[in-house]
Image 1 (cartoon, rainbow, N blue to C red):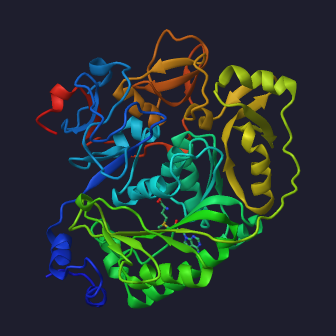
Image 2: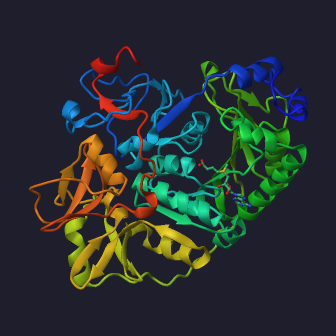
Image 3: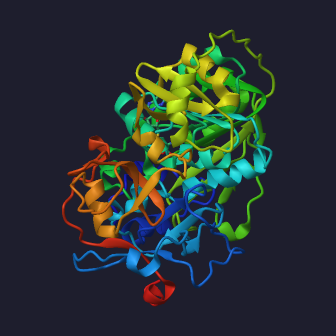
Length: 503
Ligand code: SAM
């Protein structure tokens, strides 16, 4: 017997792909699926069945060490990182891990080298591939319900030459979103903390809008047992009303011919098919039919003459959690004209103090906000001003640092961004040292040149240190430090030969 809500199970009886017995079994006996999505800007190599990872390359692996930390540096040095594991079929950077390691004690996790994301959600990549395609240059993208940032980091990777606005209405969740976006390192991202209705003033602004709506969460029952107790028919109804409201409020911000992607982690028709039909009927959007490889196990709905196509993910048909996604194209709508006050450029002296720290292939625009100097790609400077006029900006681009007199005090955002200059000194840390650094403890290091330097692990930046004559100051942000003190399992980089039988 499962403890699944009987009313939920009964309500799904007639939905395509639903199998009561398999559904109940997967919640009782189902394996836990762990997957990560690699940051292509930080980690070398992608995962796809056609891209082989060479035997000599290090592999991300979890290895039980009975509480003893091992020094991964002695094995692999600063070789670029590649990940080996079974690929997620619909996302080139997605990878299943054979078991759930202790991500907390993997420095590469804190450095934004990968994001721990549920595999079904990564299907967003394939939806973008089929709707937007590869011409992403200059596109403006909104992730309306974005915290903690799983879809936003995927969007930042997909639209590396576009502008990604990640919005979260709840303040403390917006802080988590900003942290994850910061770690991902892309300068072409803006984090906002606004209500969906504030986006209407941006009339026809975005080329792509993702609405990963707050929902009743039944798709995550396997991962979150509390969600089972919290589920109710009343909440499904409330969620479905809120989903309509969010879509109606923000739809005006999408361009004519723009792409709308709607998703939930709920199985309920009221939050899935009923909403997608409503989007077509009430908002006038055009449904998009996707090509689905039969081997993926994804169930298409809407091929029975309904108003909209949608794609259901059942955990007994694929390696992933319950998920629903649908794509639309907007037809019609007007584009607002925006007159903005241009952002105030930094002075020559300020720019001279910053530049030794920064390296970017793309032209950057530097501006001041209070004491901080911020960098955004120059092509987006007016857009940042437009967004600032209508929304509450939690973060835009990369905060480079603060000027104290003529000296630059670099910001952590710069350390983990992709804008770092290779002229800045680097201090490679062992796994044990890296964890101490991330715990904001003192790290014992000797014979280092004085001044600012980047603490690195496996060639990836972790954060700043300042080497003084008699000590080393650890500048890792206190609010992000690792609080746990024990390491039941350490995540280490290993040569394939070491973990071959384990994988
Ligand atoms: N897209 C996220 C990801 O992939 O990591 C997950 C988003 S979660 C399903 C839905 C988000 O919507 C939550 O962060 C929640 O705080 C936010 N939310 C809640 N009420 C909202 C509202 N009325 N309008 C917009 N967003 C809302």
